Image (tube, rainbow, N blue to C red; front, side, top):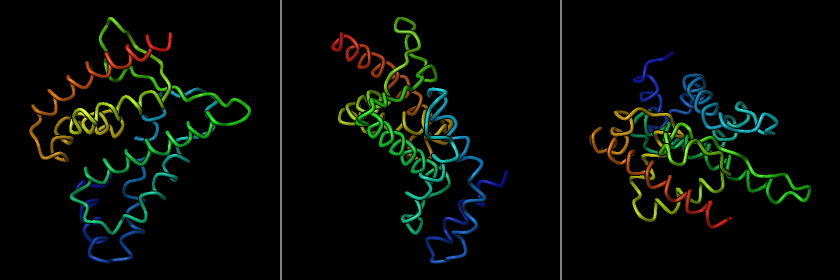
Amino acid sequence: MESRGEVTSVLERLHGGDSLAADELLPLVYGQLRGLAERCMGGERDDHTLQATALVHEAYIRLTPGLDVSWEDRGHFFAVAAKAMRRVLVDHARAKKTDKRGGGALREELEHLELDAATGAQHLDLLVLHEALERLELQDERKARVVELRYFAGLSSDETAEVLGVTSRTVDRDWLFAQAWLSQDLSEAALAVE
């Protein structure tokens, strides 16, 4: 695995206009992007039509036009990559849901969110999770970003704190709040459907 500093260095070179740096970036980050994709897809159906490799490539293609932006560091890059993967999965879920043959919705395993024992581990539609995160974002954008960075990007509390410019303790408090909030919101959404 390449050093964290090397990824940041390549991102800085990209921002500086070094076109050769773009060719160096994917090999440096591919393994971590692949792990991120596998994490994002961990709770998906076995017959899911989108594979982790395809998710990495689609997300990277979406990131490519923005490679010349001023990346703060590798954490910032992976946070944006996680958001791109989430968008790819949501777009894929929407396309499957509107498929005339019925397609069905993608399922996302929320065990990693360590939901309250009262609700237990839930399988839910990725679109439902996406909508819940959008509602959380309206209430508190930073807490929604913490979920995105911790859950989707797989960043540690310290890495998340660095990306957001807050302390690890703040991230831990936001993470606990967001878990409880999502648990309640998703439970209420489930009751509304029944």
